[in-house]
Amino acid sequence: MVDRRINSATKMLKYLIPLILFIIMAIFLAIGLNLKPNEIPSPLLNKPAPAFAAAKLQAPEQKLTNTDLLGQVWLLNVWASWCVSCRAEHPVLNQLAQQNAVMMVGLNYKDDPANAQHWLESLGNPYSVSIMDQDGRIGLDWGVYGVPETFVMDKKGLVRYKHTGPVTMSDVQAVFLPLIAQLQAEAP
Amino acid sequence: MKAYILILLLCLSPLASAIDSRQFANPEQQQAYEELTSELRCLVCQNQTIADSNAELAGDLRRQVQEMLEQGKSRDDIVTFMTDRYGDFVLYKPPFKLKTGLLWVGPVAFLLLGLLAIVLVIRHKKTAVTDATIGTTPEKLAKIRRLLDEGEHS
Image (cartoon, helix red, strand yellow):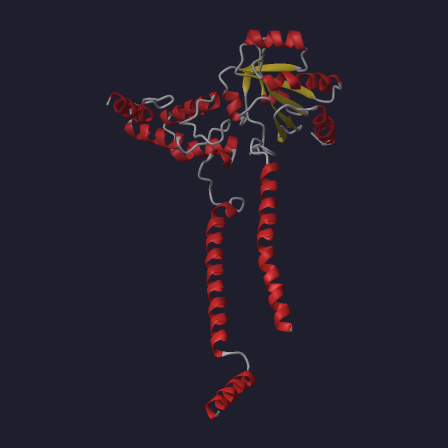
């Protein structure tokens, strides 16, 4: 009697094995589906912002360097007039600029200056200043691989956050504004 | 016949046309360039090396590799330069670290697990077979003997 009961239990187990395997596989597939392989973690986080000295888009005879920005919280947004998702992001940046929460610098990446100027004139200019990176060298130093990308720097000039892809209004509310407030409160 | 020649030529075409071939004066640099560009990942089209990719970023990275080689930088310098900016992800062959441990050890672990499972299954089968041939309890054995004895007497 007891033997038979054990036998039927092991038989049941045998039928359950495929189900268990399926569940394990489903869990792994679900994890895989929710990974975002396009978002590569930046090795720059908590390291000093890469140095640059770049001509300003609207005043090419003037240069902006990374040391000019030390001592304040600032945001670097990589954009280009040829970039489709930048167009979707632009109104969000305009709204963020209106809050005056942070110094916004634009990195005009591999763009034609005339197109870039036209873009800012027609869609509004959220940036305190935009700098030009026509051959993509500054972008390379920042590890830019897709436009738009957005970095937030603290008062010491360390990169504290990187966002890949267009920033949405909910990103601004949930991530950017709290982070900026926190960084503004830190000692310079 | 013409068709075969055409097919043959088509098969050869990938060999002939690298996306953007660069010439170095020094053959060692040329080799280093070929090797490096086929070990670095294009981050836009993630399953292509920068040697294979047509993406603009891949072009920029190739230019960077070429310039650094011409400046006399070593392979390690260039790999460090790339990983400082893009992380280990830029390497097709990631370094062995705590973070990448599972990646390297995983396949071996699964192989060992599989072997262990095979050994256990075989052992289980063997004991099952011996149980069945020898019989289960001394009482049962005694009964079998008695029944056999009775058979002989009748």
